[in-house]
Length: 134
Ligand code: THU
Image 1 (cartoon, rainbow, N blue to C red):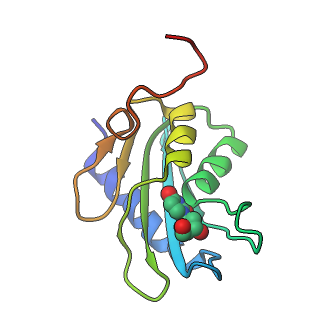
Image 2: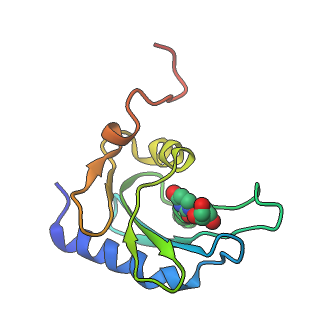
């Protein structure tokens, strides 16, 4: 089980970074943070693009920062989103981000957002593809 203080900090970091989202097309600002197995935190925001397709979600931005800093195992992710000017709301990672989180955290990785209970990635992405066969 992840220390509740760590979970609190993870959520605070996602909330705090969210105003830096670059979201001129959707107006939907997302902040994310991840916690590594050695206790480090990394944050990310969504980075949109005029061509829409190249948009990077906040969770994947946070994962990229963690990996670039040497992390290879993530234990938790927090994500919050909503209209740019509004207070952060509860959201869950999109399907692509669930797959990316699975790569570095597996099914045990915990996903948190505001106001509702955390969920394991195994619950959010059951029977994930992991490169192997059945
Ligand atoms: N978005 C994220 O950053 N994370 C998600 O898990 C879902 C969606 C972003 C992408 C886009 O910039 C905006 O939210 C609206 O879809």
